[in-house]
Length: 174
Image (cartoon, rainbow, N blue to C red; front, side, top):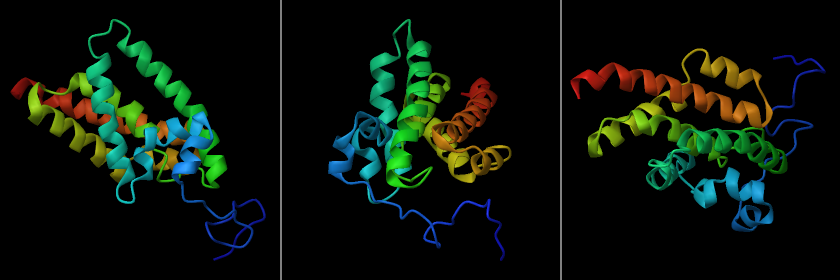
């Protein structure tokens, strides 16, 4: 495989900045780290994105009845662009697996559309994780082309959109 001088270095390749594994000290070193790592959920050694998505549940229960719910979601998304950008640069990887604020903020968009009850929450969770992991078009395409904090947040917002469409599609039968 040939590369051009304009290609970014591959992870672990010559000239690549080695990726850091986030630690508890990294989490506490900067407010952006604390937020981007989902209050520590991103430190999970297994499935940090799934653990990060779970963080959205208590936030949703806290904010769901607020008249400003969607304003909070917008703030979480905007601040996430900044926080994930800072933490990604400091970790040496644009979209490190430990950056989970994108899952938290985007899943908050999905939960108001979940059918009531435990099954509805589980369905919303499963659909969001499916689209976030699978990355159907244009999610994967954009994820590969948009860097920085915006790129980190954008693919999860689109995954949330797919999950919302599915939930709206099944809601007449729930």
